[in-house]
Length: 313
Image (tube, rainbow, N blue to C red; front, side, top):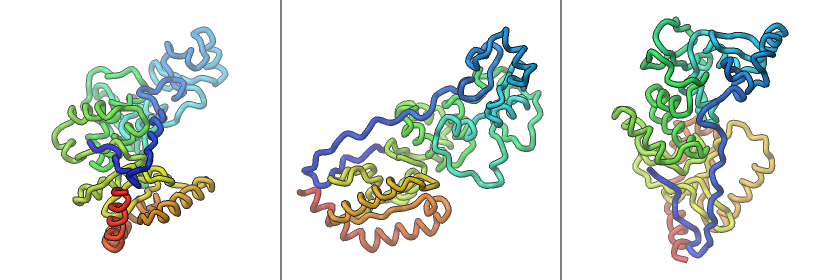
C-alpha cells in the first residue's frame, strides 16, 4: 500500500506533521442518525414504550415494517428499503457513513442497493439486491455497517470506485490501512486484482482517480509532498506537481484565494504546478488525461531539474 511521500523541498526545510485524519462517519448507523428504530431503540428517538402509542396517534411516529418505526425526519431511502423487506448497503449505505462517493450515472440514481435475509421479499424494479442471502440478518442495523457495506461494494463496483471507497474510509479515519488490507484479503482474487494497489495518502476520490491512473500507466507518483512556504501538495509526477480538487462546487472564496497564493509560492520556487478541477476529472476525464500527459512531456524536464536542485539544497 502506498503512503505519503517523504519528499521535502527544499531538503533543509522543516517538515511539520500533517493533521490527524478527521472522523466524519461511524462504523454503525443508529436511530439518532437514521430516524428509524426498533421498539427497543425508541428511547434514542426520545420515545418510550408508554409514549409510543400517543406518538403513533398524533402522526409523530409511524410503523414502516414489522418491528420498525420511523419519525417524520427519517431518511426516506432507509424507510423505503425497510418497508420492502430490505436494508440499505453498498454505495447507498456508504454515502450515509460519510465516504467520498463518485457521482452515479443518471439512470442509476433512483436505484437502491439493498440486501436481505432469505428470499421471501420480492425485489422491486428500483432496487439492486446483494447476495449471498443468509437465512438470518447478519446485523441488527437498519443500514449495513461500514465493513459490510464495503464488502458488498467491492463485489458490485468497478475497481476504480472500490479503490475510492477504501481510500476514503482511510482518509476519514474510519479504518486503518491494516483494516482495509484485511477487507481486501477476505475478498475474492478477482476483486483484489481489479482494485490493485491502494494509497493511504489520497484526500479525495478525485485524487484517487488521477493517481491510480498515473501509477497504472507506469509513472512514479509521490503524494503529499511538503514544500516550504506552500504546505503539502497533492501529487508529484514527472516533474509536475498536481493539485487535485475533490469538491463538486466552489463557494468558499477564501479557499479559492488561498489556493492561488499557494500556487504562486510554489512557482516562486521554480516548481511546475498544474491545478486539476473536479469538473475536469469527472466530466472531461479523457481530455484531462491527455492534458496531464502533455504538461508532463512539455515542462516535466524543467520541473525535474528544479526539484533535483531543491533536494540537494
